[in-house]
Image: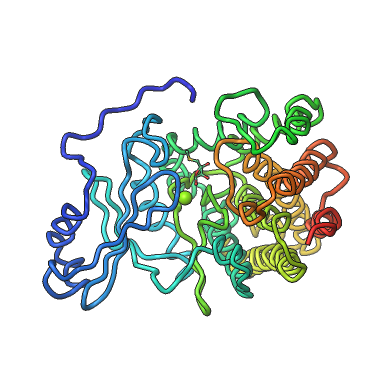
Length: 422
Ligand code: SR1
Ligand code: MG
């Protein structure tokens, strides 16, 4: 981790155990009323699943809530110290994005700035999309919903939809999310391309491809360009960690959660992380139907994102209510010029998406935080072989960016390379 000092936790901060959570909730009248009944009857279950925070679900006679608290360290690595501000940014992100995306995310019910506690709606009817996919479930509407979420969230926080004063005010707040942006810069954009003790992989069979990724000068150039793109292209407010573990699904509902990595950035970063995780699932799939669903999900996500984003743009232009970039006045007498400009814009997003998807695949196999999708393959050699194939695809996408510039092309390539497995 780059050197920067960790501010001390505020004096009032303490990590709450189940008794502390019960007292805390009882002390917030709106939350106590939502749960109902006497606090002694509330059922409190720890469901911490991610790398960073403590998460509990609380059920009372009248309803439930989800309680999330920042720890002064990475949850899965107590030696890795960290400031507490991540739940502040998650609360701020939900408040910004909820009016843009409606019920595709959750409501903030409460935020406590001393304890860094965030309380949101409980989604106890839902399962984590990644787990659902690993268990072979079909969630036919999930990818489309995530595409709509990204389109609404990014369009409405971009200069296409609002004047620069409003957009920069919002983005400036999230530029302060330096703690978690540093994690992204290190773990996604840097570590896999250098020797680093945080890097690891499951088998020496992957040594060669990991070294090729670190040493290929074409990969280095492309990764350098994507580092700059992530850090300088403030296109919109991003979710920032949009993997399949950040999506909760039920039979008829999809919610995007865990916006603690929210930051300004290029729209293709959110798209790339989601597609990268679907492709990781594709390479881990042990049956042809599952592979077909993974491929379908990539296509549905992209179509939904692309078409919704353009629809929002067309509507804004028609109503003269768009922002300071591609201003409606500029194209009033030139509709075909606007169509061309829109196609160029979406092409840039697609190319960013492909590169960030490749970088997500790489970091999830040879970086610090792996995905569990491959754990369903008991034979370690077989697991490593699939991971090697996914890594080779990602390496090729970065080394020769001109060879695959559309999401349809990416899907064809991934499907071809994964076809040999189920
Ligand atoms: C130390 S945090 C590691 C990873 O977990 C989070 O979910 C993000 O994906 C981050 O990169
Ligand atoms: Mg998370």
